[in-house]
Image (cartoon, rainbow, N blue to C red; front, top):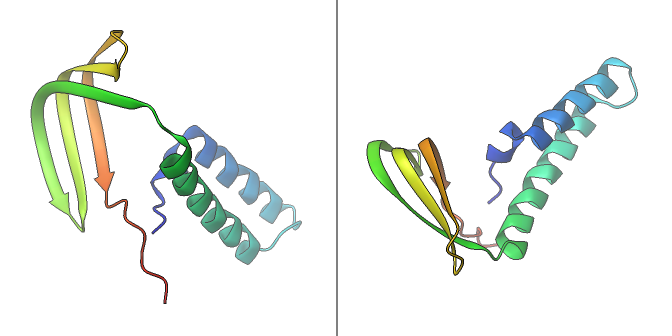
Length: 108
């Protein structure tokens, strides 16, 4: 399953702005732009699942949490991040974590 969460990143916003500009200039169709965005969703999800090997632990004070439409959302305060096995520590005041099911859909 490919989530559209990463469209809200700097890279995703820039891609969408570029596609909008190409549509306005008549160089691509809106249907092609949608196909590009869907491919971006698949590619970013695959890359994060297969290429990222770093592990980070964190702890903080849970402010709020929510589970809706199979998506967990957590807001934490006074959070400490630590990359394993390194001892470097990063502290932040507030973090929002959005977690979705990472399992692939079965192909039929």
